[in-house]
Image (cartoon, rainbow, N blue to C red; front, top):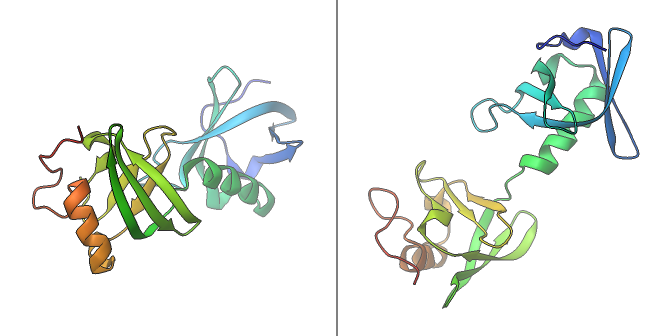
Amino acid sequence: MEISTVLDPANLRITEENDTLSLAHQGGQVSDLSVVQCFPESDPGLWISLRNTGGSEVGLIPDLEKLDVGSQRILQRRLREKYHVPEITKIFKVERGPEGARCIVDTDEGEVAILIRGESDTDTRTFPRVVLTDGPSGRRYQIPDYTSLDRFSQGLARQHLSIGRRGGRGSRGYR
């Protein structure tokens, strides 16, 4: 089946069977697809790319909201699984070790340990939003508003993670 680059949401249907994502469009079907957000930070519901197993784009969906409810739900769940960044609500402790700073934090998904190996794992470019990346897994966690954390959590972040200093990334290393 030949598919145009931009798909008309009114003329397609997304289905899922046994964890396999399929696209039905203009009488044809393409299976075993993955989904990618083109603009996950700025426009998460717009320009959704459907890709085959080789990573080539099969088509673009301009707006999730224009899809039928069933297709919307399938893609929204898939995108949440792929792009959801848990929110850190509290920092319990930070321990320094040879591999970096091990942070025990509470998130909207429960308590987790995050290993911050270096300054590149602490993104403060959009401060007061802060994004921490767990070195071993590559999983990202966000503090939506650093100033809303309790004072103890803010103190740990300032002391050990170079967060909350004027000018973004701090000057301290993690060695």
